[in-house]
Length: 338
Image (tube, rainbow, N blue to C red; front, side):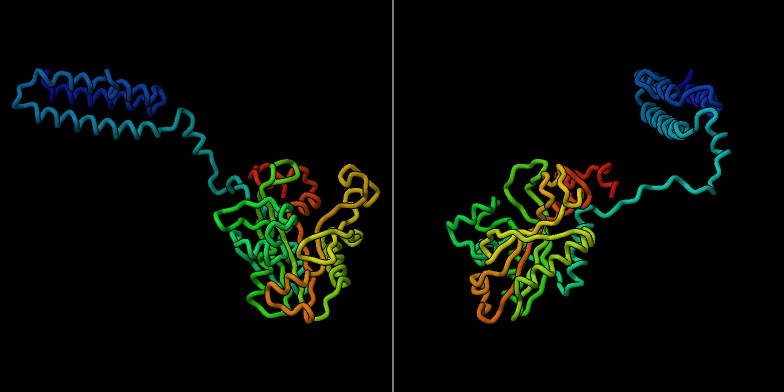
């Protein structure tokens, strides 16, 4: 039998086998191995090339390559043939029915709380300002009354990048804004901050803060307490109570920490508030005159208050989340709850 006759015979044989695949009587992979496998029928024809006269080999090789290309294309079509019974299922399918719904994304809980905080202070007349996350020592420490070697610097576990730092608080935004704008000033500074802390249930090396600054000619501690009390009741409900405890921050004097009555037990005492009935949510105080001097504001003319809060802390309280790491892991099962 000549090579040409062998090729035609193989084509006819392949046609018969392919009809069996379409009828569900055979498998496309079995046909592929039979014809194009390493020991298949096409390989057998190629092995006979040595017995063909040298003058006829180019034409014979071309004919075999064309056969192989044809079979490859046909086998690709066969691989897409539905299994027996699948065609009936497709015919029974109603394509006019709506498909399965795709899961929808949601706003991250940290973003939700951040937006809620900004909205509350917007009603108090605050505008939003943003500052750099990588900054100089002057804006992050020195202008905020952290002189070199001052023990207050030990309160901040800082990431240094050469002569710059990853900001440890968004207070640097307040310094930038005051140096670029004349008073009065009433801004909210939200954003990411970084501290070199061990990652645990309650601490993370990256978190979010919202800080506020109000500077005018007659700002008092009473203004600070009234605005923050309004904020707490707007965020946690009208029944929440607030209290202020003396504290220390280098950039405010006097300084205080604000607590709210435990939103879980109503102030009666539980394991969340460690049976104290109160939960700390932020630090605050009147702007230290030394800070005003750093930004060339006259402290004899201008007074102001500042406050700062951790957004994760607020979100953990409001949503009842007990592990801060959940906010950063991207677990869809956790995020889907919000």
